[in-house]
Length: 225
Picture 1 (spheres, rainbow, N blue to C red):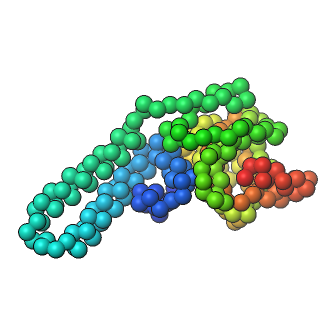
Picture 2 (picture 1 turned 45 degrees about the vertical axis):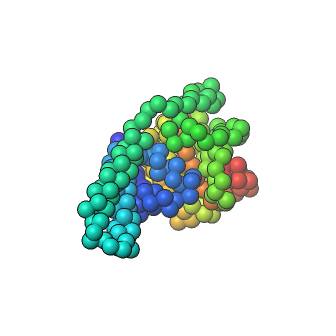
C-alpha cells in the first residue's frame, strides 16, 4: 500500500502544466501507481479546463447570441480533455524493459520515450541520468542493490524520491513501490535496503554527507546528483 503521496498543490501544478519536466514525470509515474492521485489530477484538469473556457466566454462579444453553442462546445471539449487524460493513464500499449546489474525492470510509461544515460556504478549504487533539459534540476534512475544503501546525508537543495520497485527504510519509516518522498535541508537520513530498490530521483543540488568518514567523500553526493 502506498503511504506517501504528492500534496494537492503539487498535483494541481501537474494538472495545469506548471511543473518542470522532471517533476511532471514524477507526478505522472505516481499517478500510474496510485488511482486516488490519478482521480485528483483528473479533477484538477477538468477544473482548469472549465476555468479557461469561462474566462474565454467572459471576453466573448455577443455572448447571449451564442451562449448555447459556446456551452455545448465547452462541455464537449472538457469531456474530451478528461477522456484523453484517462486514456493516457490507462493505456498499456507502451512498455520498455531495462537491465541493470543483472536484473530486469519495466519502466513506467512516463519514462519510455526519455533517453537514458550510461549506467555508472559505485559500490552497491548504480545511477543513470535521464535526458531532460531542466537546468540545475536533474532526474535519474537510482538502483540500490540488496544490502546496500546511501550513507547518512542531508540535502543542499530538494530531493524527490519515487520508489519504482523494491523497498528501502530509513530512520523514519519503511517505503515501497509508489511512495513519493520530497526532502530538503531539514531532513537527514540513512536509506538502506535488504532486497534492493529502484527509484526515480529528482534533485537540484548534491547530497551532503554528515557522519564520520563519509564527510570526507562528499563527492559521492555529486555522483548521486
